[in-house]
Image 1 (cartoon, rainbow, N blue to C red):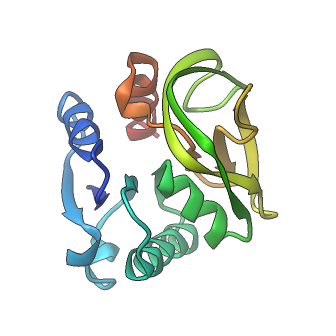
Image 2: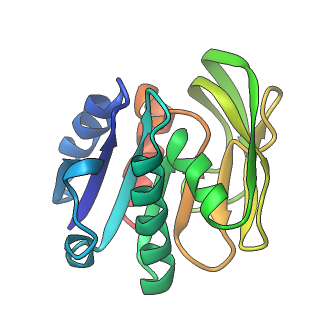
Length: 178
């Protein structure tokens, strides 16, 4: 069972719609309605984007990430989800110019995608440095770390919103099949 963590993104409904088209069983819950004991029952996680900074949200998402790493569970962080993934695993983020709209990324071979893909960007922060456990598997002309991946586990982060384009929705579908 997959848990979709709603961090307040306007695009969370689009993630849910994408998941509904697949055969994956999932539940969607707001970050503030998830107990840390409850996360043990899930096999995988998707962390949505956010609208505003919230220290409780950051703490809860960091704990979900560390649980996924420690228990070797699959995780996909989207936009803010990727940023908090980088932070939780020793990386840094920085303020960037607001990037919004479709963008072409180029991906190395990975389980999510390979080659050139069209994705939707909507962010004003970006991952600037990766911790030792993460590597970059896709970049664009605007952003160096478009897709990041844990060195050994099926834990990914996308700086963009995959739920907003056909190529991105395929990435979500690929993630659910890992």
